[in-house]
Image 1 (cartoon, rainbow, N blue to C red):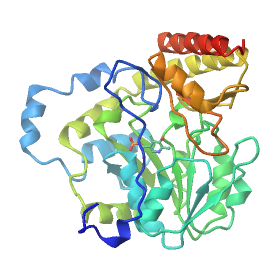
Image 2 (tube, helix red, strand yellow):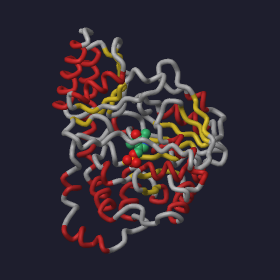
Image 3 (cartoon, rainbow, N blue to C red):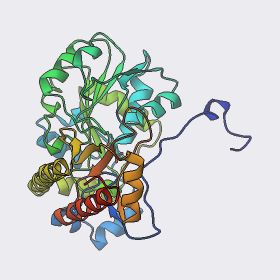
Image 4 (cartoon, protein in one colour):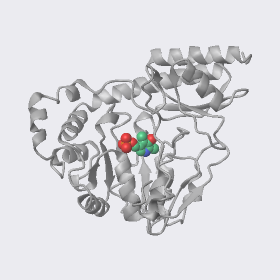
Amino acid sequence: MSRFLHPRYETLEAYTPGEQPRDRAYIKLNTNESPYPPSPQVLSTITQEEVENLRLYSDPEGKILCDKLAGLYKLSPKNVFLSNGSDDILNFAFMAFGQAGAAFPTITYSFYPVFGELHGVPCERIPLRKDFSIEPSDYFGKNKLLLITNPNAPTGMALFRMQIRRIVEANPHSVVLVDEAYVDFGAESCAPLVSEYSNLLVVMTYSKSRSLAGARLGFALGNAELIADLNLLKYSTNPYNVNRLTLAIGAAAVDSDAYFRANCARIIETRENTTKALESLGFCVLPSKANFLFTKREGISGAALYQALKARGILIRHFNKEPIADFIRVTIGTNEEMAAFLSATQEILREEGLL
Ligand SMILES: *Cc1c(COP(=O)(O)O)cnc(C)c1O
């Protein structure tokens, strides 16, 4: 830390992204990326001409992409906000809508408290139920910026649209942000509710179901006034926050939506098969609607499993905090990757005398 840093940031604890190690080739099941490449239409977007056009600024409105996303979600372009990954939107949401504080589950996306600290927004943490589900009525009448990850991370468990609707109705004086990073893997999206409520912001990303984590593209769907607020902050920080290539790729991905839906269906099938296989090895697996599983096995700690899998060239995610320290989070890869994960896991359990 330099002596020049503003004192307000001296104690800021930054978000820790999942590791991206380069020491050897790993089977990467640790950051919820898609195991499948983007669609052929996306790949063919990157022409020499597009690259040459990088000398020009991108369209700050991203009009072509906004129009396409509006069409896909049956909204107006005024209801769509584009950003450099959806983390950008979360940042803006804390800046814009955090004046009364924020509230979110104790176990959820670990970036939220970082934004809270960054912007001086006091954060209330609401415990999950014993079964790790979210109790909607715990969020009624808070009238703070609410953050509901649906499906939740790292549990993978989802609320129904109707349950979120009740939360939105019970907080008329604050924004309810539904982070739908994983919604395409089997949960109900709240996008159809956007035109009904002025305080609902649905946040989505291209990073998971659309196989474009490296392109950095996220978007929010909401009432036109909420979207205008986000634009105010965007135009006050970085008006060209989405680059030209990513705008083009994003539009091509909407055009090939069926390709991505098919990938999601494959991932869902692999998830269900992996769940059964883990259960037959004695694992407890939370019911997941995401592209990952949250699971634990009696007799071996999450940390020990993480280390033993890493030694075998398989990366998964472990969170060293209670009450989830016993769990591991495993991204759903290809069938081959999951077979490798399962056989390594079986080997580890045998060595530990647990099978
Ligand atoms: C991955 C993820 C995001 C954000 O991803 P971006 O790559 O910044 O779009 C947001 N919320 C949750 C819960 C996530 O898991």
